Amino acid sequence: MSTIGKTQITIIYIAPPEIVEEGERAFQKHAQWMERTHPREGELALLRYNIIKAPELKEPFNPSSEPTGNTMFVLDEMYETQAGLDNHWKMAVESWENMPALVEWSAKCKAVTAHNGVSIQGLW
Image (cartoon, helix red, strand yellow):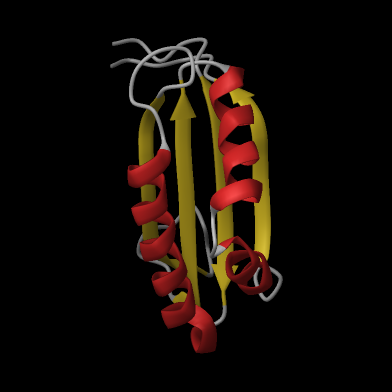
């Protein structure tokens, strides 16, 4: 399945060591909520949901670089259409009980967000 033209959101959180466990718990709850509430077919379909955890490196383009001590969490969600992502935000505000906790945790991190992205290349 080509992903070209699909809607995506990607958020990179850089967390200091003292809040990494809190982030792990928040994303565990987020994944449970996503699985329970998001459509898998049709215009609103969630096509991909992925969270990775990795050390932040002092030299980002050198994989053997020393870590900074911070941890990166990368959240990646892909939807069939923009309407799916819009629905995600609507549901998050209306029904996700842990949203305030994730927002509070996020404020303790450095975060970069690519909202409303459109896939321009996708191999499979």
